[in-house]
Image (cartoon, rainbow, N blue to C red; front, top):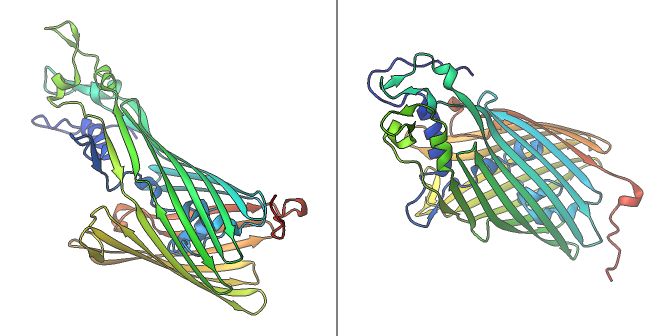
Length: 395
């Protein structure tokens, strides 16, 4: 990703904008007041996890019963009979943004299950062009490539989940979340919250609800002002010191602040229909209720917006699965009513499951290259000594 300086007339800060805009977008217009509501405070998590779930449009609040439930609905971890492991890697926007996810789930007794999950989303080799501007000429330097360095912007999340069965049909779960976000040496943030979920299951009907960020996530940003000034090496003849960021670009360094990420109520339902002994059909319908005032949706009532998701899955001989879904329904002046489909397939080989999903998990239109292929693997340690004994009585 070599930088090629554009031909400029006045002072539009040329490629420096790539850095400044990245910081500005990541901070979502950092507030002057102590706290402000962020619409996309942890948006790197919104794409979901697990290629099976993504192939079904993300309709998993009621249907999730595996290790990936730590994300979709922590109460679904109660469906594990053996320890499970999952991993998924994906890339978006032509490989610019990478996403990695790993999770483990362990039944610890007849009623209880714990889960751990780790997420990383990042952009590497971002060009830092702060030192490539010639202050005296008021233009890019003649050889800007020599003054350009690189940095990375990354988002991390760590989930710790606990699920407990309350009888044969009902389960509750909770997930504690820690969010870490970094933009090179320029800015970083910490965030904390928790999710609370419930599932009710019969032989064919499943119902679920998950209150995401039930505590309201607090996300506190800190700005390293010295990193902005330290990226500039040209000497100011008046002070005999390197120019500051404000002197060169006539803009103030962004300020830190605390954001509130409001809760999202995720409601789900599903139907599982056996077709013979080893075949089955599943249908799921989820609706997310967001309270952050987003209006670019097909359905909304004031500051409450409704995000429906639908998914289907047909499994043959408990080995091969075919999936399809609707990941998002949105409405905007630019695109009108937009329905985003997804498709997928899965192969289950004894203790190993390999799943594939394809869909737009990143944006409103494929014009921004949001369509991605996602492959995930899932391993179940189906050993006699590791099986959950659901008849066990706790002390």
